Picture 1 (cartoon, rainbow, N blue to C red):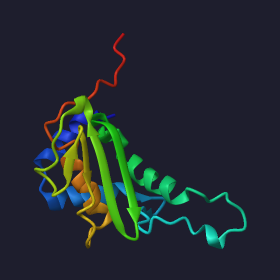
Picture 2 (tube, helix red, strand yellow):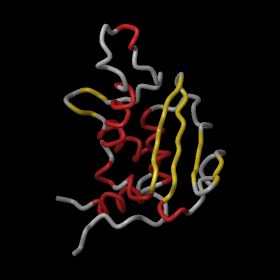
Picture 3 (spheres, rainbow, N blue to C red):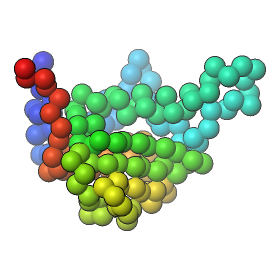
Picture 4 (cartoon, rainbow, N blue to C red):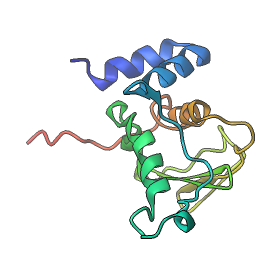
Length: 150
């Protein structure tokens, strides 16, 4: 089994177009392509019970977790992606409180948090994930240690 470092080194050598194809390939599960539900809504008004409350958030988290094996969460203390009427908002606190992000977006950084809601026009699921890759696994930021190594 390949280690995450092997994937990351290979991704760093790819062009953006090749990375987008890699992302698209990972998003195909059971013959269907996973996509973010960008509406941000749960459609509860169509349900008689409240079982589906939060289903949009859970679905979008499932899409992100498709790439957890690459270590996208290892770069952050807090990672949140939310959608409202088609526009995503990304909130990150980089591991170790390092600020940044302005290099990648026109977002702002305050108190170690990076927030951006500027990339909402014509972005696809694959493009949003590529931007998350740029902020995490394709960056040179510090990561947390995940192996217990006792």
